[in-house]
Image (cartoon, rainbow, N blue to C red; front, top):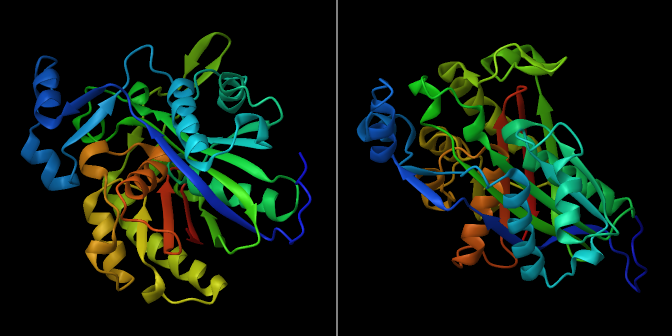
Length: 333
């Protein structure tokens, strides 16, 4: 990987284009409740909306893979950026649901795109993954090791769910989002702050593993919802303020808050703590559910394409998820 020469120093990483992809099948709460009822699992649209704000989610068909969704989102981002796949120096894919143990999903996407000049690797920080990946991409660009980086969050979380557990199976959906970052003399990513606490690993985990041709451990997602809620509200506020301090800015300078789309109450509480109006939240949890590492780039792309987010505005992106991990990135779009 190498950065191209320029007459001006390329000191910043800037978002040049965004893209997203969703499976073809949208499933409303009522449709899901009806399907679950045939298996003896009782839930309702009212129960789901009241607790989470989710009204529907997209669930992947067997032929809709993490690689396929990630590639589709990447092509949209490349098109928006006006960058050819051959110009990409690095591909980072944030995912907890790779299509296989190895090669990485990033390598599979590289082949799909024809991005023959790119290095490629996966990054696993669950729902914080995309924000972690942005920080990594930013470091490569600012160190002069890459000029164009493709950052993708892609998940098929529906394949990790226990469909007999109504407390988790109603929460998650599938999808992918992507951005192209490019070296620029103009300010882009201003500050990144990554955090983790492995002591909280058990509050959100999928403990299964493949060993000697057999699955060992519990193969489905398990979550202590109350513990996750309490942790998320606390750490998202704190990491946002740490990020602002690094950039020498105040919360009132944020135009848009784009947090991980897990639960409407977590998102509203975070905005309130930061003194932001709810109208400054980009919300997609109602239509997408929790898409883990894909949720932040999906929300970002939606708000860019519908015209809410404009060039020159200040954005705060946040993730929080299993590990326990959490992160914030402050940027000028």
